[in-house]
Image (cartoon, rainbow, N blue to C red; front, top):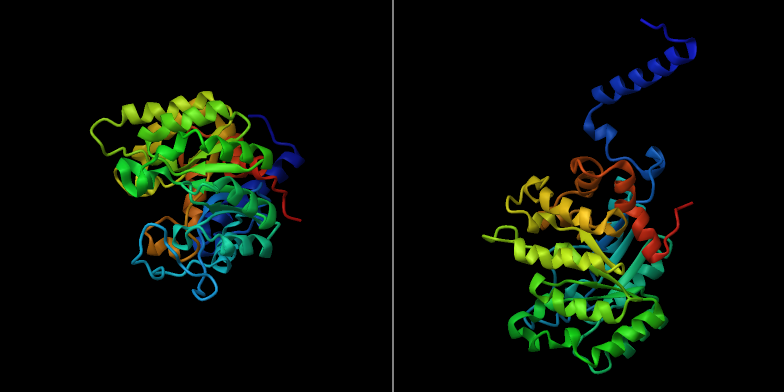
Length: 332
């Protein structure tokens, strides 16, 4: 047996001693840790909803529910920052919560409060004839970085139907997005993806993100036709997909949602690691209230649980891809 050199022995002892110590420490001590402590690359939560706790200043004009008054649980930006700090999440992209409707003031104020750590996507009424002007206002004057559209709420004729998605007048909105370099994300069902494809083909300079695997329902008898619609979008280089909400996509609904992995792998193989994004949904204790995994568990899904992601892949998905999309810089 080859003898170890003095340097190799020291290295061996250092590694084994550290490993033994880690195994004996309680989880509460070893986790969570900050990004600085583990010297991790950027971690960007690209799908974060926050809402205000001051309805007088930031009301809740829910556009699809006149009966809505206030959320059942708190979800402030301060809760978010605390949660991010606990788990080494360096940045987040705020996506306007539907509670606040078309008034993106709270989202914009949060981004102004934490400009180095947050980016913001608002909501604007897609049926508004002045929707392109509204986009320009929120981007240019209020400092947002993109918009979310939710065709899923307009399926089957609801709320006036989803004809606006690929309507002729909608091209004006997309042209404005290209001019402003805005990012669009879409909360969309698989049967609506062909309409989105029409716009994607016509506007290759507009960066598009499909939220939550297009809300694929893996519990249906044959999800394959819907799934193929999503995979079809991979041929467009300006389309990204969020690996998010496995808790709703999975049939089991049980962390770590292993029944969804074969489908995640196919999205990964179709889009590649450079066009996948990480995100969660709710801040701090609101995760538990809405039966979601902790931020640490969500990060572990990408970093540790899915065996087909390499270390380089997970670094891209957890942060590097988002840093390029939203021009985010490492924290000092």
